[in-house]
Length: 263
Image (cartoon, rainbow, N blue to C red; front, side, top):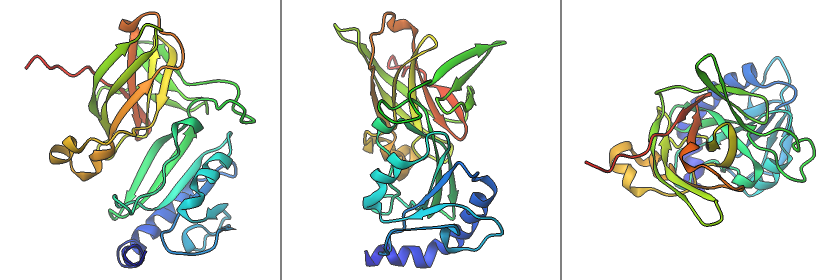
């Protein structure tokens, strides 16, 4: 904890100022700001996020990382959750929601290499959660262009470049359930926000990157170690050749191509 305090006090202060300006210009009344400092302080709710004063009022909930799971569950279904704090890697890392919550980090802002702000949106509905029963992510095609539409209603353009990664494994079992594995990073070499697998336009699997890949560190840097993923479909897949996997980051989506192992 002492080391964490040192990092926050020495390196993160300038980054927090920049992050606060971004939040002030981006957060709406339907959104919530979740701040997870590594310093020990009681959980609280305030209207001046990141210890700075603003002209407007923003709802910010400050608490220890141990409260993250509960706070993610309480995030508004019809809004966005902005998660802010020190995100340097290793033990100085912001908490991420698990796949059962259906949240996708559609954007990540990095400040000074130590502070980050993640913007989470509802990608898929969560059974039993009020307000999230209808709608799910879809792959839309119009005019020769593709768009990924999340359950939140946000539409992300599908681009041909800007993200990196490969689909290394795509298998189907006797029950017609698909498993897809690989890795994906954004243009800053950090893991992407989430991955979605579609059979045609229908979503069949969703999840954040959650598989450690030490083999990526030498080529892409230490942040890429957490960029691996393994998705498993929750429904039957009829045509394996129609399954495509998309990575989401930086307010866009990109289809991951199969890894060519012939060379």
